[in-house]
Length: 449
Image (tube, rainbow, N blue to C red; front, top):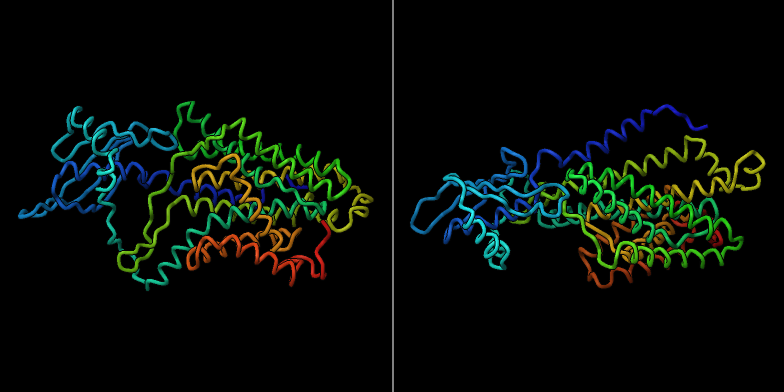
């Protein structure tokens, strides 16, 4: 029986996720708003050399303050500040709309603000004149090669979490039924659409908080992913007795979901505005600053906690024990009371929720995912599941990490156009020399699909 009491693990996990989500709520400045406010500075100081000193939250909501220095030829350096107010914040699409601006001398007039917005800030000259943020952060100086490698590793963290969650979805279904559902990439796109829908409902109610919007998007994504996976998997896996027809049916399900999303969501990808994207400096090498945005540890932390929670679920609960027993010997498990069809539906729903959560992480990290954008994610996650050991949940997590790290290192040091070809070649090598994967079966041939 699954215990009803909330175990200590889940209390720690919930606290960790809450800390990740709160990482950028109150003590950072929105990066897009900071960029718009910085772009206005050269227009307020024509001909001066600008050096941004500090960007900080303003005294009221939707405001920021930038402290900077202006150096005119033949004049002493002046310490100045600019105050910017915006129309909205958080997930609102018009959060970068400037509504008021002022300096230490007072606010500028409405006419000046109009000309500044329409004839400078939005112009190519204005964008090119962005003085940027200050680079002399008080961080450790490290060698150039180490700085570059560290930055690439940090960039790869969200991608590894996404691949790991999708690979786990493949492992859950294959480990139980011995079949592959090729629609998990599209289920990630369903999760991203659910995230956008949930966040949009919150925005329509007048709440622009990223935390509230992503929470609503999380609920919508998990429900949509679990529902579509359970229903689609029931007809393509549960009702088809043979393996090859079932595999072909999942291809049809993948195409159906792709077209379904195109009609429901429209062919145009809906993007959420960037959130928690102000860079945190970590180290430097000369002018190269190694930085990390708050959304990166947030998405990575959520993926890590969910992965650990899934391992705990499969090891310590009644569902996990039933899943492992049925995966080892379906007939013996049925004799001991395991309801195979019900367990399959539960597994499909759980796998769909994992894929949908991957879709949420894609939206939070990258802004959006098109109706056909899940195919590449699903294909690479399938490769990760095979490399890790198809049917092994720890192996799927390891494979997701390996594929994400492989892509990052290849993109950083080798021609990026050959990256996918190299990944597929690596899959061939694994199928030849270790068909069971890193943590899968040690038999000379993989489990038949």
